[in-house]
Image (cartoon, rainbow, N blue to C red; front, side, top):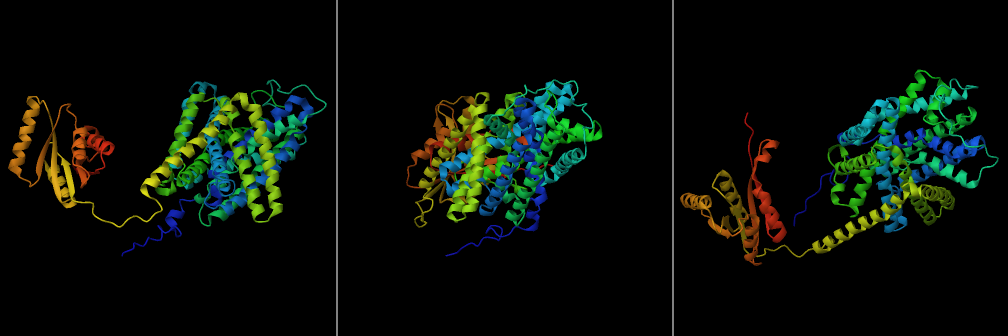
Length: 611
């Protein structure tokens, strides 16, 4: 008995350095996987302010407390996902946690919520970036759909070259945005009054009538709206395998750095909102007003706006880093087609990247590039995933008898669960009903795929030791032919090496015309002159078909022998020359696979390009 020993790479040993360089460092992880979370600084604080503005200036006074509550939840999530990374280094985030501790159906619900969130993140990020661009250049508004598709094509092309490549491309925009926001915070803290209010001048205020009290429901709505700033926090835990070794440790560092930067920026901006008594106005973002107040209406102001536009447009990269890994895990567990588990060069899950790009393009075209039609659907899926992950980690720590950590995750589950319910309830009529419908449909799809693979596995007897290898009777190789050429000779030679008996098959019409008769007689005459030592069998067909008569002939041979059909074809030297072929091989192949159990082989004779 012989046993083939796998090479180190096949056995799962440490990858060689040339493969490791296609994976992420901790700093690269920030630029490749945190763009979504970083960009949410542009709309998270604004979401809080717009909700509280309904209660007037008194309501805006709660901006900092609400933001601190969001920052506390951020700290809980970062601590939780840091633990998830250590416990589940193969990635998957909430899907992996739920699969281990909450059962398959809950795990699939978590996966479905993440898939929806990642797809919507691409559409929202791209449309938000283009919307900021068309605000600066109104003449481009009519071309916004094409601009969205162009940005999507750019991000897709970069990610097809590998996640490490995307990290290098997007590192500078990420650094510029973070440093510019931190500059706004630091400069604003040292000012006693706004340096400028030119950005908001002439714009109508969105402030409501002043109230004397703020209800708990309004605070909950503000908290839930502001939690949109937390989308993307889970991306690092989902993509742990994309990091260089030691992957878990690097991913943990990235998660902590992301949480620290995001927390500082959110609280810093909230402090400035209260300090400058900022009020929301129509047509100008809160971040733009803060940049104006801190840096003045000059170079710094426009740098912040430009960095925001770029980062919003590129925030879709977070989904391209996280979703293909999640699809890989789902495919590995037989919940999606196995093609999603394949990886190309540079560690690229190419089919996952292309799937995300295609679905996102459909969303962009369907929404007409309008961000307002997509935002109501955004973040619901990620809150569901957050909650499931926190509940799973509670069970994880209770099993490990770590009650303090279980209490922390339980508190996080309560906050994210409330946020999910509030957002879904307040946005239900604005499109959230679609998410409520899509989640169970996706779960049903995952289960249907799993059942199909289970049936296939049962037929293939997966997991069982097969019967001993034995011959199944005499072997027959059939070769379809139409003329005698070098290709015919190569096919018959190959067939002679595959089976004990070889027959050549040709199909002739039952009622031939003059051209058909001449072709059939020429083939018979040339075959007799050539004498290859192989029988030529003529199959008549009244309908002038090609594939079905051969399939019927194979079926008529019975079950007593192993039948192989060898289809000879020309492999052209240039891609465009494929259009010149007659596609007979594909027609025969399709008929045989559909109607017979014969082994089908396609022999290709490669044509060398002329020099």
